Every structure is written in C-alpha cells, then in structure tokens.
Amino acid sequence: MLSYDAPHDSITSSKYKDRLPKWKIALTKAGNLSGWHHLSEKYFSYLAKVDSQFPFFKYMMENCGSNIEQRETHITLDFAKYPVGIDAPCTVSGIIRRDESELIQRIVEATLSKVNRTPLYVAKYPVGIDERVQHLGSLADVGANDVRVIGIHGTGGLGKPTIAKAVFNKFADDFEVSSFLANVRETSQQYCGLVQLQETLLFDMLGDQILKVGNTHRGINIIRDRLCDKQVLLILDDVDRLDQLEALAGEHAWFGPASRVIITTRNKHLLTTYGVDATYEVEGFNYDKALELLSWNAFKGNKPAEGHQELSQRVVEYADGNPLALVVLGSFLCGRSIHEWTSAVKEIERKPHKQVYGILKISFDALQDNEKTIFLDIACFFVEKGRVKMHNLIQEVGWEIVRQESPQVGKRSRLWLTEDVFPVFLENMVRERMQLKALSWYCPLYLSSDAFKKMKRLRLLILHNVILLTTIEYLPTELRVIDWPGYQFPTLPLNPGPKQLVILNMPNSHIQQLGEGFKNFENLKVVNFSYSKFLTEIPELSTAPKLESLYLGGCTNLVQIHDSVGSLNRLGILDLHFCGKLKIFLSSLHFECLGTLCLRGCFSIERFPKINIEMKLLDKLSVRKSEQIKHNRIY
Image (cartoon, rainbow, N blue to C red; front, side, top):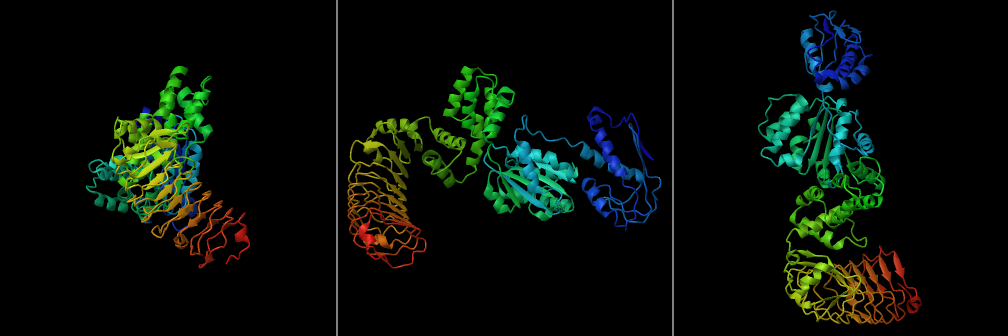
C-alpha cells in the first residue's frame, strides 16, 4: 500500500503546490486501469489511447486488479492483490516488472516530469497566434501514426519562433518525449555547437545529464538508437544549414511512430532539399492585426490612443505587417508625446530601426556573394512599377547595407537617389565599380558625360529625365542594363560596346541609326526603341541569337528591318504597331517561340512574310489598320 496523504511534505513545496492537482488527476487516470488478461482484446483500443499519454503505465498481467480510493486530500494506490511472482509479460515502455515500490517510484518520476514541464514563453501580446497554431496543428495532424516533418519558413521578423513555441506548448504533453532547440543557427556556430545541440536534445528527451556524445557522428547514432521507439516532438528553431538537420533529425526513421519534427528557417530551399512532408509560409499581419499589435506595445491597449491614429497608421504602413517591427517600434514609441512620435516616425521612415535592421540583415549575411549582388541590385534599382515586389523593410535593409559601405556617397557601390547622383557627377567622384540610377521626376537633371569614362565596371545604367551636357563617347564594356528613355543623341557609342548587354531600353529616344557597333550582343534579350521617331532602320541582328523581345512600335520613320530578324528563333514578341512607313519587313518568318506579332497601323507593308515553320505559340496577331496585309494572303 502506498499512500499520498496530507500534508505531502516531500512534494508540497512552493514549487509543486500549484501542480499537485494535475498530478493527482494523472495518477487517478493511471489507477483507473483495472486488471485485465494480457491476451484479452477488449482493452486494446483503450490501452492505445492511455499509452499515448502515459506510456510508462501499460501492464499485461494475469489476474491483476487495482483499488483506487480518491479523497479530496489524498490518493491511495492499492497493489496488494498483484501476485509478486507472476510470470506474465509486462511492458512498461522498456521496464520489466519489479517490486511494486520501485515500479511506483518510476511512475511518480515520469508523471512529475510531465506535470513539471514549464511552458515556453511565447509573447507578451500574442496577437494572431491562435490562428497560426491552429493551422500548424492541422498540418501536423498530431495523433496520426506516421512520422511527419513540418517546415515553417518566411523572412526575418515574421514570428516563426513565436509560432513554434506556441505549438510546442499546445502539443508537448501529447507526446512521450519532447525537445525545443532554440537558435540552432547561432548555437551551431560555436565550438562543438552541433554536439551541444545533440546533448541538449538527448537530455530533454531522456533526462540523462551525464550522457556526453563526444562528436556529431556518435551523437547521430545515439539519437537514432535511443529515440527510434519513442513518440517524439522535436522543434528545431532557426535552422540555416543542411548539416544541422542531418545531425539532429537526419531521417524519419530516427523517431518512433506518431512523432513530429517541426523546423523553422528563412530558407525555403533548405526544406525542399531536406525533404519535409509539409510547409507553412508565415506571412505578415493584415492591417487590423498589425494595428492591434502596435497598439498593445505602444499604448497597452488594443487600439491607438486618441490623437495618435494618423501616426499609428504611418507606422503600420511602414512595418508592412512585420510583427517584429511592430513590437520594436511600438515599445520604442511607448509613452512618448505627439511631438516625439512625429519626429521618431520621420526618422524610421528615413532609416530602419537598428534592432529591426539587425534581425533582417541575418538573411542577407547567409547569401552567397553573387546572391548578395543580385539582392542589392534589386533593392536599389528594380523595385518599382510592379516589376519586382519586395517588402518595404527588406528593401530598406538593402539600402542601409549600401549606405554603410562608406559615409561618403561617392565611395558607395550604388547610387539610386537623385540627390546623391548630382553631387557625385558634379564633383567627378564616381568610382570604377559604381552602379547608377538617376530618376528626376519634376525637372531634368543635367549631368556631364565625362564621368562615364571612369566607371569602367558599370553594370547597371538607369537614367530617366537626364540630359547630358556633352555628347557621350564611351559606354563601359561590362554594362548589362541600359535603361535610358528619352536619350538625346542620334547615335549610341556601341563600338567596341558592352558585349554583356542584356537589356537595352531606350523608348522615345532621338536615335537615328544604330550603326556598325550594334552587333555581337550574344546575351541581348530585350530591345525597346518604341516611339523613337527618328529611327529609320534596324540593322542585322543575327549576332543576337538570344533576343526575346523587340519593341519598335510608334517608330513612325522606320522604313526597313533587316531580314535576319526573321530567323531569331527565340523571339517571343515583335511589336511594330503604327510603323506607318515600314515597307521592307521580312521575307520569311522562322519564329518557333513567337507569341505576339503586332502589325497594327503598318499600312505601307505590301506583303505578309512567308511562314516557314509552324508557330505553335502564336496567340496574338494584330493587323488592324494594315489594309495592304489584309488584302494579301497570309500563309
């Protein structure tokens, strides 16, 4: 007979007092398993249910019984009727049947380990957490007998660790053992970091403080051997490399049936490479949730204080649904006056908050060198007019990275603000590797062309509403993009020319002819001279085999297009609308990839070209106001 009577001196310390009711309930459930025959099937379904929650308490004994007497102040478990010398098998999750006192001690220890599990801290203001946890729960399908791996991915600051901790708190008690490994990326960078993580995992799962794995290879074997028959909940937070996953959760078979592994990462491709069973992309909050989270942190309520509505709206729009930014900025602005709010909002709109910047820059630091270059190019030059979308905060991180290259604007790698471009050109401070974007919306920006001679490594040249004071005589040979609407000169210095050019976008230009230099562009994909009213002909383009789009619409003085254009088999768009003087078009077409052919308003073309190949992708053909073509056979 073992009795847990009041006052329970050994377990009613302040540490356990709050958990004692749960402890009593757990033992009561265990005690309610009255005796059964180990070959009887009537209890199997009930055993499966109980074993999932109390796997340490499953008996198969002949002629066993129990007598539970529960009072308000104590629980008594009577094992007196259990035959000590019984030979029937006993399965207690690997424990063989021993003296009742020892067995009960093991039950008590296992029960206390569950009752005493301290929940993880989730968030001070858990706005929007419940919906996300519910969605993760449906993906995890806790209780199903398969082993399942779920990946949570998204950019920094969206709350991936917060969601993972909330999921762990909700479901940990449904598993035999569990472990939450936080900051995997950071810990793995330390000396023997992966070994530390393996030992933490094993301690959480097995409670063995003495176990030392020595190295990752031995740790892998121990994890696999010791956990392969246990129902495991394992959460790996902030993973950024495949070797981390291989050391901590290499395969599904490492864990027992009904186990769940949840991985949080910024790298979606990593999840694909590893082979997760399902993914959940964390997105930013909508406006209402974002305003609520900001309000709790800034005003300690669920809505902005009176007089702060407009400023709060500006902060929410700036954060663009990013929970981290909302929490950091809300806490930063808490308790400040309207005047201080106004000043602070202007400052954060100009430059990202230091803490937000630090978190988001982690993703940038993880990129390869060429990926960093592409990211900064996109952030500084291409997020506009719907061409490329990027979160406002992510773009500002890109800007800040370039700003920190040097306090002197002329020594930075990229210029994208007009107010920075003008003084650099004026004082001739350009650098060899500088990339340039100058957009002047309200009045023309006047620049000297001499600076281009020093920009020998220029790859991106984007100039809108810019007027050069002198004729341009040189273009850097490494240019990939020329985006220059309204170019003012009749010729373009393309000899020897930028042989790596990919995009040539010069609509509304004053160009009259492209000249001999317009050749040998093996990488050229897009050419746009739309509404260049002085352009008279398009030269041979056989040396541009990768050309995909040719825009010449509105070139009202265009008379001739070289016949080589008809043999560009990658060409997908040929736009010649309202080229009213175009007579010599093409003798034949060999366009395998052509999807759009626009000849609307080309009323001088006398004959439609001969089609020498089946154009299966052609889905748009426009010949309106092209009477000569309409009256000729198209074949």
